[in-house]
Image (cartoon, rainbow, N blue to C red; front, side, top):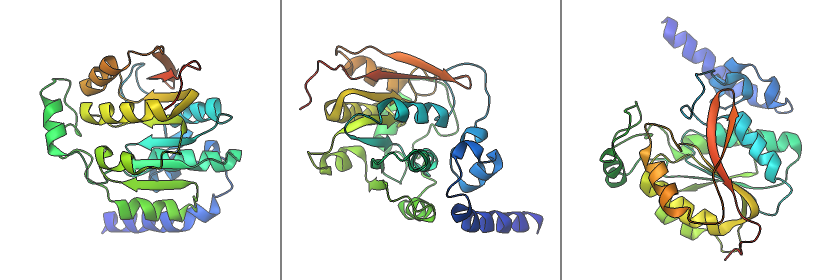
Length: 254
């Protein structure tokens, strides 16, 4: 009974709160509210020992948006899952008056078994999401509903595995910032091959799982494919270390 009442209260907050906090800077949201709404906000970040482990950090994502917002091109969030980072970035962009589209790419069905099995063979540290059906506890419809509750017209969700969804994007679409939070070797390889050539000079690709012990596929894909003029750089906020690279301004986009 107590748990039922708690869930009823949470559902009421999820329904009532979005219009009430629409004009609040996300930095002012209480951490409990971000967690209840399933939106990543600065006060919901959990401190951890300094290192490359941990979920996507909204402070890092917002800093990358600030660094790239004056460039041409839109923003990509690959690995939407339940939309926490995607919506957090969308809210921040609305707050800052940044008129770009966020393309959120995900299967919304979890890992495909073949790609997940390949990563299991690479070793790495086990965690709760590292299995054949990891990140399957989501749905396209639920994330669309969450985006709509926050009235984020800048967010465009694209459903499908990357090998199927990325080629459907118009050849005219370019990106200034791409956040890759995709866990597996195949997924990182597909996203890097696509977004490197869609990234404008000076744009940034952020690699959420680089050097993260449960995700050796990220390092393998990056180290294989980044034989370019760029070099990896590290950013640390709230003890979260994340790696990224900046597209060389001397590189022509295709």
